[in-house]
Amino acid sequence: MIRIRLSEEERAALRARAQQEVGRVARRIHFVLLSDEGKSPPEIAALFTCSAATVRQWLKRYRCKGLEGLYDEPRSGRPPTANKSPKASPGL
Image (cartoon, rainbow, N blue to C red; front, side):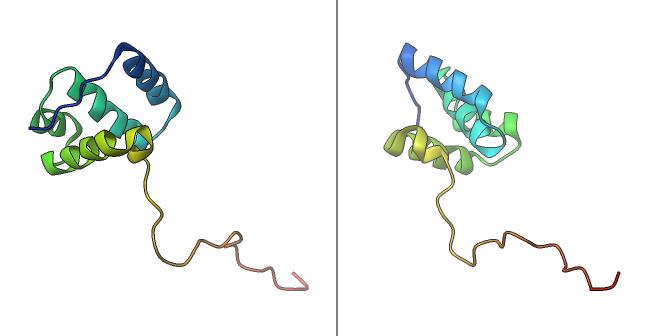
């Protein structure tokens, strides 16, 4: 079983960061905080309606890379275009 143990400073910094972040990153920070409180990956997964494997993956990434490990890595593929709106036709 993977478990994260945080210092008081790390815990305070993660709590503050969880309030600043939105979406997936905030959720992953909560995985770490709950692990520090003694919750197991299956217990955390049940709270967030995801798999225990997902929780373990993010706890391992945090253990190896710290907070930066909780952010998505760049994905391959075409970058999004800045202007997706259709061009206006002249004379309308």
